[in-house]
Length: 110
Length: 232
Image (cartoon, rainbow over all chains, first blue to last red; front, side):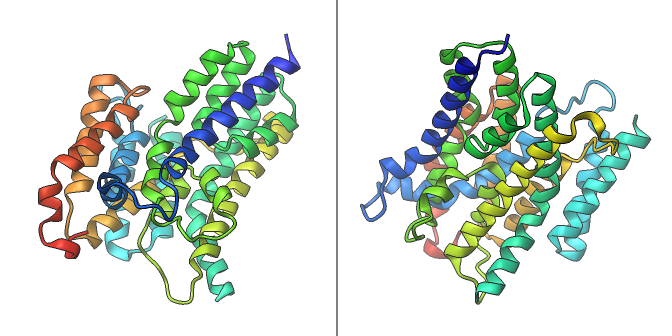
């Protein structure tokens, strides 16, 4: 049953909630005011760590125990890394690796 | 300066384009299937602008979930964005009148590109951040609208295109790895995330991982800060 009011409220809750989460650090530590040492420290070293987390995050649903055992991901990731070490061109590495992955999951491992 | 900035922002947003357009289409199609019109997809992509959350929202909408459940899920799923804001406190200062929009638009992908330290000559930092954010959101909104509009008339099999996100993060991780002498933060990021993934499972590991990473980074501050500003 489509209930417009309920649906709209739901979307609003999500939109406001998400925005609040994103704005919170900037509200807690406004520009111009001195930030605690811990926060400045995180500011500097978190990005590198988050990149590592994001790679794991993208692969979180890959099952090593059931077919295709993460093999397409392994091959495509190896391709991305090798492309990149060879050409150091983000676009080639990303699109090349993605094209290979799509080929693997649509044709080879389907 | 402006032209170079536009070019760099566009070029840097290209890896995101394919992923966002096709994933956006997936969202638009899903929402259509649940009985929500084109405008729901567009408005949600404009106001929420969070991929994984929007997909979950489609289910919440069709199952008539309560507002409390929705609020809790929003925090659980989007909690990691808090750490993105934390990381950008410095870079997003003195960034002009568009700052609220920049903060609003801080998705995984926009964050990962914006936090790179590859300032190019002749590029206006403020305009770059704004354009990068705008381009990325445009792709997402466009994809959502297109998907909702076309529905299942689409015949191109785009299975696997979301791997472009994985590839993007991997390339950025690699660039960072190659460019810095201090690799401990990157290693901690991966190791702690994997451990949390194994302990908490795919849907619940991110927030524990981010908390664990923050604590671990602080714990090793002696090591990281040895050598002073030379080590980044």
